[in-house]
Length: 214
Image (cartoon, rainbow, N blue to C red; front, top):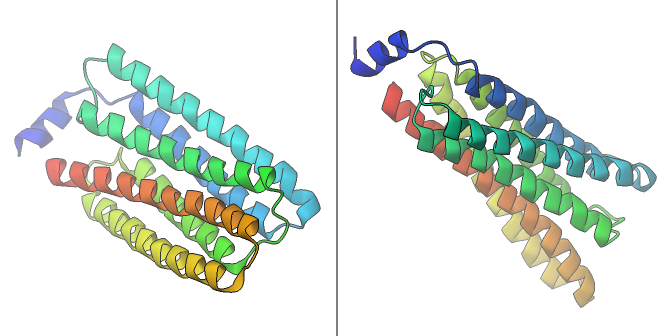
């Protein structure tokens, strides 16, 4: 039996951090689902859904803050303190960027949701679903193969979002003559693309945990 496995066997089952990860998993999945619903909803229904995204963002921020406080209070943690901090910070960053996209859509009064904008939102929905799976599976310290696969899926979705974003920006500059409209759509899509970068940050932390404890 490895030293890591012996340590995990001797340490009492965590009752602080895994429940926080589970809460974060549910909220980040719900946030991405709500944003995806918003971009596919009629304009008259979109406003409320976008506001809901911002509320969910605040709830995730509170979970992240609680996690940081608990790190300062608890001597024993289920895995490295730095990895816990980096993981919850990355999840918080995803929520920030998706909320930024939602608030910009409201601020700029974007009525026409373009196909690339929908594709980027869908990529975030898929990536956040994988992030949620990863957070939930952490408490099963024997399921590292699945955790590694989840990390690969997130990285693949992030690369997909990069390609959609690059093509969308090129199309905007080619087909849109109104400079203000160019700025509006580019800023919303930039926030969505950055959110997938933060999903990849989660994947990187999950991979680090896999390497350390597998």
